Image 1 (cartoon, rainbow, N blue to C red):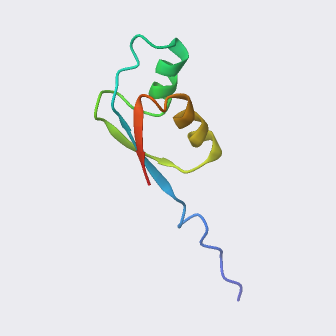
Image 2 (tube, rainbow, N blue to C red):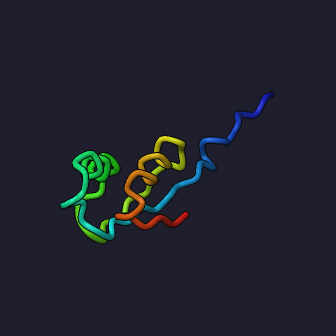
Length: 68
């Protein structure tokens, strides 16, 4: 019997924490923070480690902290 690959079970996650308010920055940066699911300062969410997530983090890197 063939075994099923367990690649999805071992998917990496990133913990993203909002440290600064997006108020006063570009509107698209505030929308990016909302898109990541961050609601308030010191709110932490776990996101999958994908190129799309990395791009969002890069856009607001001055507002968030990332841990693996």
